[in-house]
Length: 254
Ligand SMILES: [Zn+2]
Image 1: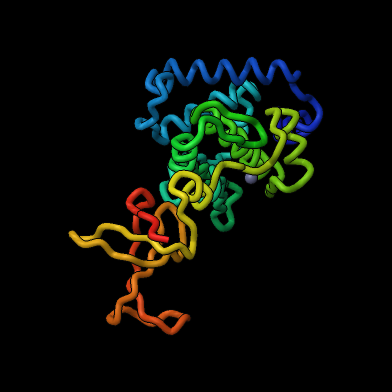
Image 2: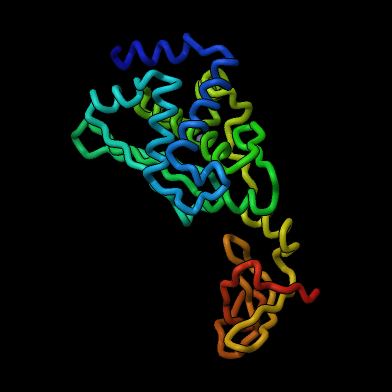
């Protein structure tokens, strides 16, 4: 099947809703077979290899392997990466085109920490508008979403999950109700688990002492500004030293 025929069939020949659920259950079982630790809720072994496997299972079960055929025929490359730094979205698909070449380099990056930390503080997560009961389900929903980004980029050279075509494909091929990765963001998690907010006064241990400062920013750690005459001057006119502190080490003092 050539790329045009594949593109047309994607927009016209949708699976039955119950077939989507059956397929998602089959993929989950296969992932559990390959990595029994996932079945026990242990995800420390998660690697780029598992991401590649998950993608291939989605391609085989949903599209009869046509995405891989499409990439191979066109000479495109696809790699997978676990991103430790992404803290605001669950996944990201990027395309690189070498000048003068029709071949593309695709990369799907997934943020495992965002997924795992979400499940560390709550039992379910809403991803793509679907309630997920465990990290593997959340990961699979995110991979489905990224698979569609890849497909759009490969077939139409552009992709946006805010647009109608993406929403249609996401709903009809995967049962997604929303085209966003609505996992908790780190600042929401911090607020929930540790009740820490920007602007709050906190204390934390540092080199045998307890330092006191104000939370300036929250990502995967909190940025705390501690008054210090040797530090640089900030916009409020005072001098501070900046510390990056794991959220679990912070105590609220106000
Ligand atoms: Zn998206």
